Image (cartoon, rainbow over all chains, first blue to last red; front, side, top):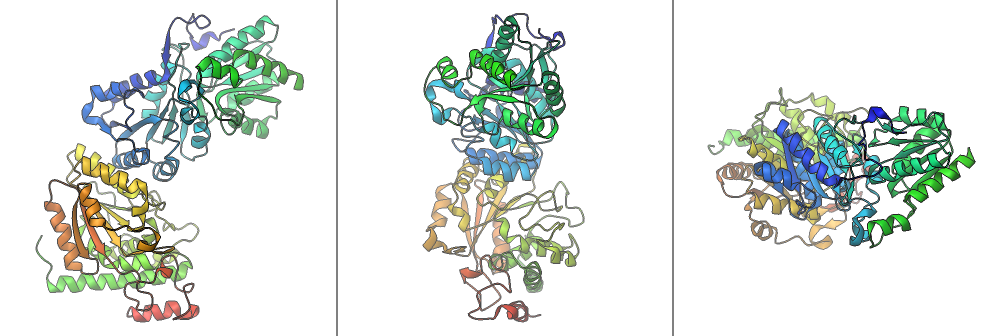
Length: 328
Length: 285
């Protein structure tokens, strides 16, 4: 059942409102900027589509148009952060942090200055644009970096909170947001703390612990409800913080259930599943299945076609749970 | 600023000579690192730390200080040597260069050493950091200047030109870049590896004000820095022509000394075990 402490929307299984996480970022940035004049926004010619336009319209003197130059985007921001500003930089995730990874490593992370990197249009749901724009490696790229916090919100409301929280940290942060509208699941009353995963769906005697992030969280909840109907009890945890990963929640839920499934719109290599497997291998070895893109690039298609083709749908999650519980 | 007096010129030249000796000593002790570039930039770093920069060695975080970003981090021995002579830290600490636990990392790290300003090494990202810093400072009406020392080789990096475009667009007049035009890089002479000229025309086309100087002529360099302060329309590039390995006859202009310390360099002129000693003798020690 839904964990009442999470204050999810009543219509979570029959959603009425949809919004993209990039919009939640845009709204959160305005709120954060209202509170802190040090916040500046930089965009590499994608101001409207990354929803930084909300900030640019309200604070034009704090907005910097960078042109199509993602390496400069990161390094100019590093200089501004070094001075004392709190820069948020936006582009598509395929380009930032895709193209400018070394600049982020050296001038942001080793330098340890508080640049907030917002990678929009991440994941397969970018759809018709095809493989080049469907960023599936960003969590791995960013998770590998010391000093970096990696956040992956599940809906627009959580993206708003993530953005406000990111502005308050003194470290580099990566925020992954998406283009497509997603069901609104969380509310202003849903707790959010960086590094603390949220148990959204709980059961007395679970046989599998599901850990999901970002856009696939809703599918994970739908799968949990379907499995309940089949007499298979699971838990669903929203892992909005990929780094630092919430070791305590992961170990606790893995111990309770004895089997684990990770669910993410990312390569199987190095993302959420990898982060969880690293924790469990050290602290609580547990049978695990990975719902993720299996070492392949995307292609043009509608979001639903792609979710189905790459095995990220509700039926795939149900299948992964059925498989993992036989291994326990 | 007034033109330098003869006495001031002598004093700055003497600082440069001391910096060169320290560079040779620290690299010989480290057993690795870059020699040619730091020697070539010794006059400019002496002028920066002992004349041009507004700074306080006893208060490296002084908020009104001028900022010096080093883009080509591999020449950091010249900066460490200049900082030590200027009083940022004891001269003996120079001998810890590149050693475990040292604040003097092989490539500069902001968090390790007060006054280092930024982290660099991978080429082509210093100009944009300096530009971002200058942009942010101007937003807040700060009147300190931001300097960026960079190499000619890193003009081959795309990021450098993204930064040049950005600084030109936003007319960052508080930014002064200093290019070490020494014509060498690791694999050979720049014009063989990847022709860079005409550098002046390129920067002018990107809306920069360019001043060319002899990088070993200290009064000329100081005058260029003064001229830069008076430019109110554009970012400024001081295109400094230097001789890599300057001060040591046997290695001047020889690209093979780009990334080599004394004791490990080419042996066709001086045997390896004699290199540090001979170099120091030539530098007057």
